Length: 50
Image 1 (cartoon, rainbow, N blue to C red):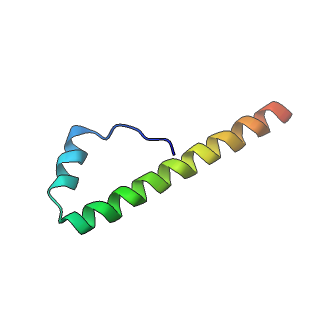
Image 2: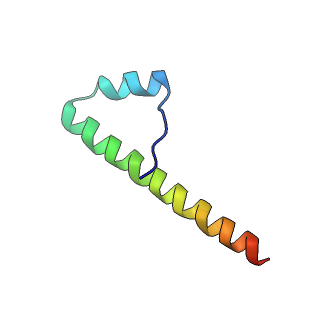
Image 3: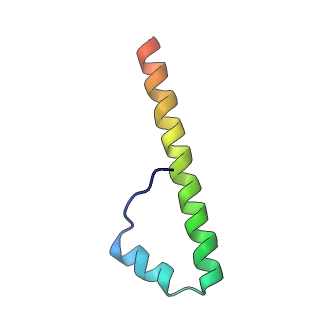
C-alpha cells in the first residue's frame, strides 16, 4: 500500500474524531490511495501501448 502525508489541517480534523471514526476514515483514505496507484499503473501501461 502506498501512503502519502496528510495535510496538517486534515490530520488535526481526523484526530478530533472518535477513534472508531478515525479508523474508518483512515481505511477509506488508504483504499483511495490504493485505487489511485492502480489507476496510475493502468495509465502507464496504456500510455506505453499507444
